[in-house]
Image (cartoon, rainbow, N blue to C red; front, side, top):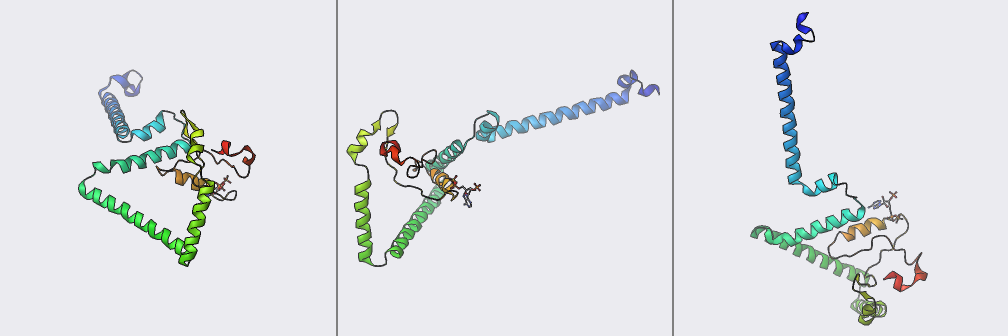
Length: 199
Ligand SMILES: Nc1ncnc2c1ncn2[C@@H]1O[C@H](COP(=O)(O)OS(=O)(=O)O)[C@@H](OP(=O)(O)O)[C@H]1O
């Protein structure tokens, strides 16, 4: 009875040992998790930013980060070994060749005869000349702060809920693509505002 009394519980030898072991195991566990979190933050500093700095993770920032990552990955080819570089370069070449073959195949499917293809190309070129922005027009629309304001080189057209947003975001990932933040809805909602607004 006396063994479990409030005074003797801290003085008797057995509970003191148990208390010591308990405190020690708690300290060791705490130390272990502290070291683990330190290791993780060193290994994944980017995720750390998002998780702990309260940074607003919007679609925009996510895709911009992804794009930067992809871009730096392609820039970082120089840091690879010779074999890795050769493999990477040949993969890029393979992709380019496959893309070229696909484009040619689509062209031949779309215009089966050579004359039709030539006619198609001439028509496209003419259309391009008519609708593309000239250098003088561009100079008028240049500002020091925002760079050149150009008409788009590609437009995504789609019905509502047709997945246009997904396509836009997927294209935005490419380092050479500069896409608008939100869908501008020029042709269906803002047409009367004119091309100056659209640029
Ligand atoms: N690949 C693929 N497959 C199936 N569904 C897809 C795909 N990409 C986008 N989506 C769905 O398309 C919906 C958004 O389309 P939009 O971006 O055109 O929407 S909007 O009209 O511009 O608001 C949206 O559907 P809801 O979630 O029902 O709104 C997306 O989930």
